[in-house]
Length: 90
Image (cartoon, rainbow, N blue to C red; front, top):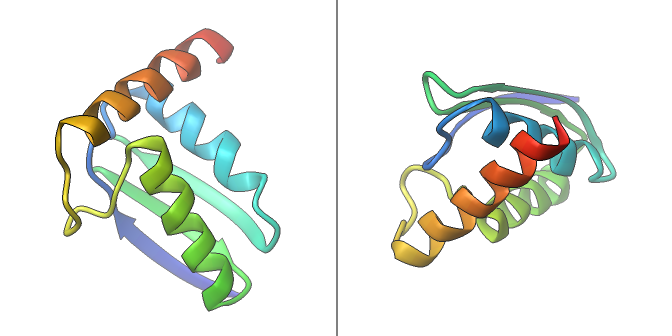
């Protein structure tokens, strides 16, 4: 098992954290997810590099790219939508 802290853009609140945790724990090979929205990080335990790649792809699709990736208006809009879903389903 590998452990890593990812710096992620657009994490704003508990709604974001809930959406991220829910979606990432559905990925096969992800063992543990902890989101710190104050610091914009996701602590992750995962099986292998393919799992890490799936996590990065899922986060990006949700509007939460790595902090070093492009973060345009579309990404920000996606993150707001997932934030609202997280707040509603929390």
